[in-house]
Length: 112
Length: 113
Image 1 (tube, rainbow over the protein chains, first blue to last red):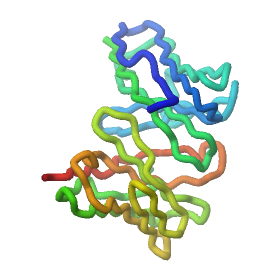
Image 2 (cartoon, helix red, strand yellow):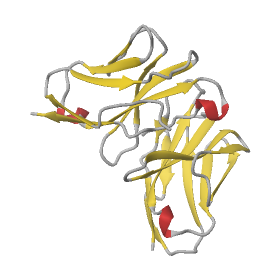
Image 3 (tube, helix red, strand yellow):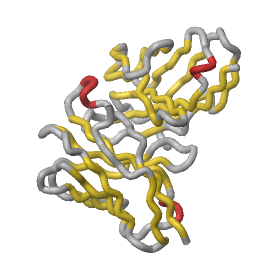
């Protein structure tokens, strides 16, 4: 969607390597979110941010860390990738807690 | 656990109205009903949300029962491009974890020619 970009779109990495996914927005929205989507589990919240340097854990945060040093970027890091982290990762933004979310196009990550 | 119950799948003929039901019998007074959809391989898309009054926008209508225990999303004239998984979600508008969007399994709507 316009205003939110995820990079890379596809990545293959080896088990044990660090991986960082980037979410970039041009909407100046305060709230940003990282989800993962897997068959049989649907979309699950990993981490979210409610402002610069303000982040919190979601329902499946183990093995992931995030950083938000400026409004437009929200980084998701897998410190040591595992095969269970093979998934499609979606970033989302929202301007307020009561607003609809705008989702990015996703990053397909494969850990071999 | 998901706070909503939706049918796993539904079919609809192209050009007809698609009525997607959702049960949320444990909804609390400060929780809203949200609908999103996800077309294959794309990120979810916001459709509409409401508290207790019926809502309409350019995409759909949302009908919420008076007791707020269930709702129906209506796509008035379904097209093939409306084939997607539709998610009904209840959430509060408070900040913090209470306000996060938690997705269930949704309803797979197939619009057929």
